[in-house]
Structure formats: C-alpha cells, structure tokens
Length: 237
Ligand SMILES: Nc1ncnc2c1ncn2[C@@H]1O[C@H](COP(=O)(O)OP(=O)(O)OP(=O)(O)O)[C@@H](O)[C@H]1O
Image (cartoon, rainbow, N blue to C red; front, side, top):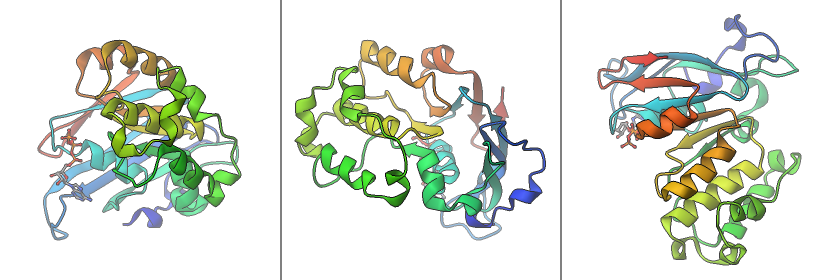
C-alpha cells in the first residue's frame, strides 16, 4: 500500500488528541527488489506521545534513514499507516494532504543537500509554500544564534559553510516552522560536545524521532528506543 493509500478508519486505537503520532505495521522492502523481495524493515509500530523522544538505533545501512523518510512521506512504503493525533481527530497523510503532513512531520536530513543559494534563500523558499504561509514561524536566525551560529552566515552559500554550521542552520529552519513532530537524522553528528548539549536542550523538549549512534546521547535524550536489526526485525523499549 502506498502512503497515500493509508486508511485512517482501520486504525481504531487512535483517540482524538492522543497520542501525537501513531505508526502501525510499517514495512519497506529493499530498493530494487520485487514484491517478494527482502524486507528492510517489517511491521514497525509505535505510538509517540507529545514531548516524547524515540531514539532509533541500529547498524549502518539497516534502514534508519529510510524509516524516517517513509514516516515523512518522502519515500513510499509497501505497507503500514502513519496517523497524527490532534483536536480534530486522527489524520493520515491522505486525510490532510502530503504537503501538510510534511509540514507537520518534518524530516531534517543529517546534512542539508548541497543546494544552490544561501540559507536565507531556503527560508524564503520554505515560506513561499502554501502550507507554510498559514503557519506561525519563529526566527531561525535567533534559534541558530543560541547555538553559536553568527547571523552573518545566513547569506553565504551553503557550500561555503562548515558541516556543523549547515547542520545547525538546517535544524533552526526546521524548528522555526514549528512542526508537530521532528524526524531528526543524526542531528548533532557534526557538532562539538558542548554545542551538542545546547542543541539537545532545545530539541529534547519536542516530539521527536531521533537517529543516533551515540549511547551517551541516547541516555540523555531518549524517552523510548527503537532498534532495527539487519534481519528486518526490531525491538522497541
Ligand atoms: N527508497 C529506498 N527504498 C528502499 N531501500 C532504500 C531506499 N533508499 C535507500 N535504500 C537502501 O536501504 C538501505 C538502508 O539505508 P539507510 O540510509 O536507511 O540506512 P541507515 O540505517 O540510515 O544507515 P546509516 O546509519 O549508515 O546512515 C541501504 O542499503 C540503502 O541502499
């Protein structure tokens, strides 16, 4: 089933307003495999409540990024549904439309793609989307300044910024859009330990799914953990 084909009525366990995000029976085959091909992950399911941080662990190549991209509706999956809770009742990507879903459940890549232009160009581009025009935005420059990023960097080309500057700026832009759930792909991998703690302080108050390879970071931020294994099984604790 494609993400757009998720049937919210089949997910009877979701109560209006709670939990923030439900993922049920999400399955994805390895790229290029036919329908009977090997699974990357199978039957992944969890509920994420407001303010929870679900840390995703697992060896390189096991499918962590792909899982987040499936939840964000950036990569199609074979089966399963994702549903957001809220005052208006549970809503699937099909109910709210994929652009709105991606604004509410925002994937932040480990490194921003090498885009032409500057971070300010990206802010302008994001703000031009119809779904973003209707939302309240915080100032991403202020958010990043708290993490030691000078405002002078925002009109430089992405390619002229260090990995850590790119990472903090991309995170600040995502946070400024106030998504309901953040999908974070190793968000501090390019940062020094002190800056990592500053970023964790801000992010850990959010509803997040957070990929990390760092045991100490998991201990600091996780309220729950999902471990993917190479045989497509998983544990959730
Ligand atoms: N759209 C896709 N569909 C199916 N498989 C994919 C897709 N994109 C990537 N893959 C494959 O899925 C596997 C897992 O990749 P992924 O990037 O999700 O792993 P990861 O656990 O995040 O790895 P790392 O820790 O190294 O970042 C890789 O073999 C990759 O080639």
